[in-house]
Image 1 (spheres, rainbow, N blue to C red):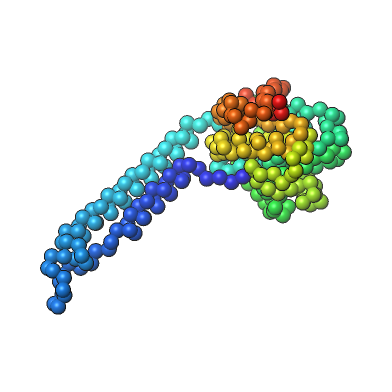
Image 2 (spheres, rainbow, N blue to C red; image 1 turned 45 degrees about the vertical axis):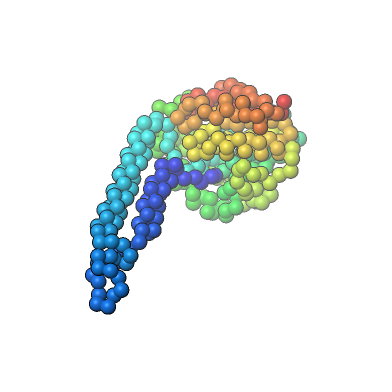
Length: 312
């Protein structure tokens, strides 16, 4: 899981900070009177001519008015942007677990072919893929920033995130319900996933569940045969910029001797991620090949593809 702040919020803070700095850096005027015995010439106030106080107050009021104007405009823009969106609107990366069955469909996995191979699940969150794969005798390592937390703390965060998403997705046109049938069935998948994860996490924290943050992975070069990334890169394109995607992909491929598969390759707006073509053309990634592979699974509209990345 990764936290982030919105650009609009940063703009609001910028204007407020600028106004505060302007007010702070402007000299404070003093009384315009000239006490008996003062060496100051009449008509001057602390080194400034009479009339400066009125000018300073007017300037400060202009700064405050400008700040308030831009704050209102930014809030209006935020509301309009949210209103224009047709997909799931999130202000953070949510804790939603996926099952092994869902992973199999996302990435078109042949589980038998993974025997004897090392698999890395990147940004795996509360998914049960690692736990279920261990039960099948497969070697899977899970990596996520939340793995520095105790299991009980993770549990407390799961239900609110799940409630938020379930309440939202049933009303959106950016989802197809052929597989899940209803929000209630979807909730069942998500609950089974995070409960299986938590049960295994108690035994595997620090062993097969390692904490960290992209774009840095704590593994040696070519440690894994296959790396999987679900619901982080591409889908959160508005929250994570191009450079984050680029550096994360380079790092994932550094620790992978085989290939990486990333799903989905569309945003929550159900539109193909705008970074895909740019990654293909990036000189720093010219040693990598990219293939968009079609699958038979589609929940988020247009998500019936994963990206296969390999060394040329």
